[in-house]
Image (tube, rainbow, N blue to C red; front, side):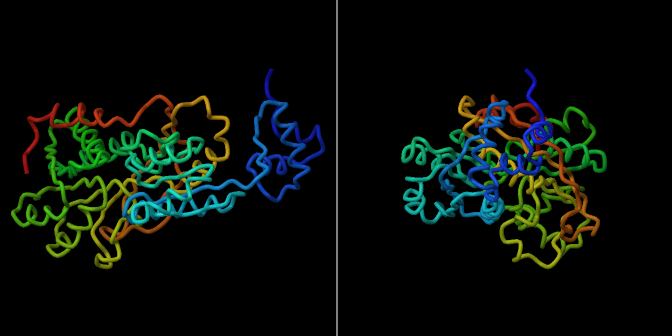
Length: 358
């Protein structure tokens, strides 16, 4: 039997559709007796809404010492404050004991940047807790992991750069899973569809190695593709000093990059791959609110759509709100973030003929 629409239910029972939407969202402004009656009505017709009688405790944890992770956590925290939750923010990267204490009676925890260690600890401390990861590529523990669509975003970056430039440096931090995955995707896509373009991997373990490579003229390329903000922060002042015409594209929004305030007023960045932070907030809140309906799902991976933003200021920091929000994200309950996947598909295994060891 087809489930009736909210409009039909509202008209049949003498309530506004807005009131039903408020009940679905868990809006606290609905009277308790009205909420209880409408939840029963919605559940009868297949909407399956949980009636929370007590305020739930949600812990939002900054799991790594990184401004990017902290800002993402704060964005989600802002959104959750609009819900009927008791929110506690912790920083396990510097105060792990504080997180352990707060987990004991928490209903859910959101980790920003966790590598898997704290997720396992959370389950040991509180077996019933629901765990959400924000950009935790190395964590296989959380019930929900929200990440950017590396495949779609990196392919768009590769198409964009390879159609414009003949020599491209792809920066690869060998210690970071996300960096390795994006580099593999870019390198493989370029090799398959743009064989005339020279793409070289610039491998490094610490971004402090990069100025030496730059000084030795080993980074003379038409374009740079940064996997994250660290190499950009290091190389931007050098490029600006030398008035280099190298085109710089980064997979990250520069507003969230660590130490951005330490750079000059207008560091060089020509384009970047971004995701919609508002979507990140909304979907974190949605899955927390509806987690009782997801008990049959072992784990979910939510891919946030990305979009390439070209900076119209010709090298300075991009302005805010240069793009319209992406559409509905992709969910993939079966896919796992697999460390071996990155290694087996790494560019050095398949496209070594084009690699220049730097």
